[in-house]
Length: 146
Image (cartoon, rainbow, N blue to C red; front, side, top):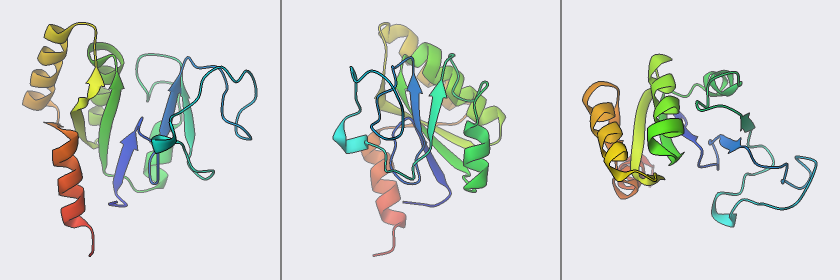
């Protein structure tokens, strides 16, 4: 993966995993109840940073921006839920901090499809890019040394 790319909410190097409102669940990394977990496909490596997110935006009152800057990240891919609330807030915060920001349209979710459609259209119009996971993966693979 491009070393100048950050994956917000997806985990895996050089990703940053965001946890919102979950009880502490990661063995050896966090303390507390074991009533929720992260699926194996995106389970963080021991060296992956974890950012606890307590508000709508992932940058607000967290060290996410510092983590991304320390890794010289220039572009951020955004996934998550709920599109018109947390996803949009995080994407706009990313844009405001100067990151090239892409919303992954088929890796976000909502309870209001009309609001999601409006967010994706508006974000693509003024703030960044909107793309499918398949297209992003194809683009990243085309950049990888063979």
